[in-house]
Structure formats: structure tokens, C-alpha cells
Image (cartoon, rainbow, N blue to C red; front, top):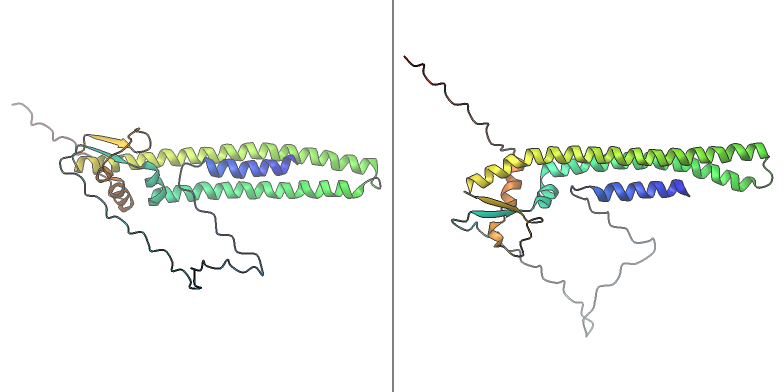
Length: 227
């Protein structure tokens, strides 16, 4: 049915189009009556111990005297408070639009089932009215899908612009504090390998979340009048 396909397309397109962080899907519970899979047992009947946790490496210090660094902008979007807030707004609007389309799909499904159940018993007039209503609902769903996609994309673009506007002064401030001359984007620079210590993403996120924006430069003091 075209209506159902439209809703699925909206949900898939809008959620995956977001450039902000994506929340992981909730874990699916096991079906009722189904036992969880047994843990592997070593030869001899003894249960294998769980794998040892992988030790986390401490962050590498920033190389002394380095003038080049890089950041991971996607990580900043995923982990910063500003990025998470933007993601939540986009997903909330997306879910609202999907719910609205689901209601229209319920109406469409009800009419389609009524038309199928009526069969030859239904009068030509009644059948014609339902068929027209089905066609009208399908057109409404198609238009609503297009409008919803545009609305979500406009919000996403607006939030992305605002995110970048707030982020850039922080990036500039951290770079100046470290004496960096050139800063690369890890995803866009094409660098094959770089010293992990050159990654200043954590410092940018920390300063971004604390709201420590650089102060506006003071205007120069007026020169005394010439006597």
C-alpha cells in the first residue's frame, strides 16, 4: 500500500539523514518462554570465565612545540551537550511526524479492509465513496510525507548552523591556547596517520560543555586629541 510505504520511507530517511548523534536502538527482549542462550562451557564441564576487559589507554599528551593538530567533529556532535540537544530535537520532530502519518495510515487501512470485507454485498455508491476516500487519503499521506521531510531537514539545517556557530569560537580558542597554526578535521583532511596526542577533541568538548566562550575583544582606547 502506498500509504504504508510512505511512512516507512519517512522514518528511514529522516532519522538516518541526521548528522548529529544517533541514539542506539533499544535491545529487543527475548520472546516469552525462550531461555537465554547458555554461556560457553570449556572442555571438562567448567564454564569459561568472561573475557578480560580491554585496558583503556590514557590520552596521549599534546606533543610539545607542535603547531599542527586535528579534531573529530562527529565526536563533538555525538558527545557534547549541544550536539545531544540538537539530536534530541530532530528526533522528537521526526517521531511526531511519523506518529501523524501512522494515524493517517490507520484510516487508510480501515477503509481498505472495509472495501475488501464488503465484497459484492456493498452497493456501487458505497463502494465508490470508499474508493474515493482511499485515493484522497493516499494523496494526503504522500503530501504529508514530503512536507514532514522538508520540515525536519530545515530544522536539522538550522540546528547544524547554530552548532557550528557556537563551536567555531571554542575551536579557535583551544587552538590559540596551544599555539596551533593549522587545525585539521580528522574526517575530511585525508590524513592516513597522526600522533594521537595531536587530537584535541576532548579539550574542545570539555570547553564546549562548560560554556567557556572567548570574551569579545575590547575596542581600542581612543587616542588623546592632538594639542
